[in-house]
Length: 227
Image (cartoon, rainbow, N blue to C red; front, side, top):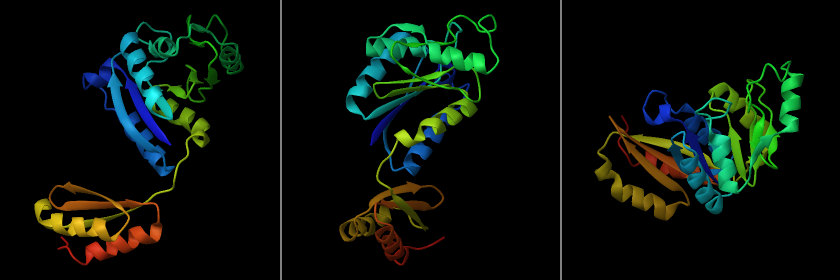
């Protein structure tokens, strides 16, 4: 399963808010064997949200959009997703019923709180107010991290892939000096390899067979200088 993640918010692009939602989603999806192909941040602008969602839903199995839900002037994500899907935005009876069950009345709720793209499946917000939505492989989640995480866990079974295994080898050598051994490793073992330099070089191995990954890590560990 290949997925794109779209985070919405002017505050993310201005650097005022750290994009922890993207990191959390990527980690959680990777745990389930799902491949995240894109992570994109867009401003609170209907046209940008619609363009990116429309492009990604044609390329990937699912698109997860997070941020910009609610009834305030800059909460335009539902309108952007609806535009991408050629839908109107309308009050969702199920979402409204959930809010009423949570103790809210119509008078308590700002206009538009329960508005979702027409035909969407409402996703209940167990940790907040603004509901999410799912439609045509697009999942719309809140931007508040606790709310986003709780809502994602309610749909997590819809995201599955091939289980992968990881191991890491740390080398106290320049990255350029390791190229021949990494090339040899790739020829010998069916694993993907990533190298990440810093004070030392962290070499991450990933594959679908746990024994092969462990064997590859052991092979490499014997051939590099450890810190």
